[in-house]
Image (cartoon, rainbow, N blue to C red):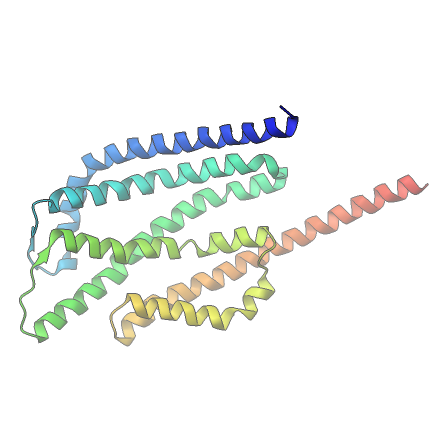
Amino acid sequence: MTEQEMTVVEHLTELRKRIMWVLAVFIVALIAGFFLAGPLIEYLKQQPIADGVPIISLHPSDALRVYMQVAVLVGVVVVLPVALYHIWRFVSPGLRETERRGTLYFIPAAFLLFIMGLLFGYYIVFPMLMQFMSNLSGSMGINPNYGIGEFFSFMFNMVIPFGVLFQLPIVVMFLTRLKILNPMRLAKMRRYAYFILAVIAITLTPPDIMSDVLVTIPLLLLYEISTWLSRIVYRKQLKEQEQWEKEYNMEADEVSR
């Protein structure tokens, strides 16, 4: 077996080992999520989001379905930093020392932004949407009863996308580090990005101006923060490139003498 083939096998073995670690942590977190699901479900049911509307079961499997959804969400939240860490450990041998230190900070930042996105979706967007739905039902003379399975599925469908959207700064910094994006390109894309983010906000919120504005503004701020962070990464890259050129020129001068 050649050295190159050994390297490929070693990489695959390393990848499998790290995937097994992530799966093991996810299974443990999933089991813990089952124990935490009961108190979490009770907490979510007691929040004023439902506005006193009875939450009932419409199917025999609703309780198990909700327990599974909450347990999986707990597992995802717990395993996210672990998965990011193992991804970093897998790719870090191919990075320079400065790049390894820089990319390591992405892990806690991505985790915190994911949590912030979930909180924003749950405490800001979801209540506005539920209030709009309740008012709409009242205007039609309908007394709402929420099925617990549909209620939590609707909640997660509204909340989890914001956890993903809040990863925008991390994605932009990573793509800038890979030299796929830069602050000049982001500035040129600003109006298109604003339009896309506004469409996303309008799609995920009730059809009233206040709700649209309250969700659109944070998303636009995220884009501006992403542009600012991209500028920092880009300037650092330019300094590293300039330092490398100086060292290269000095070595070339020494060789030519």
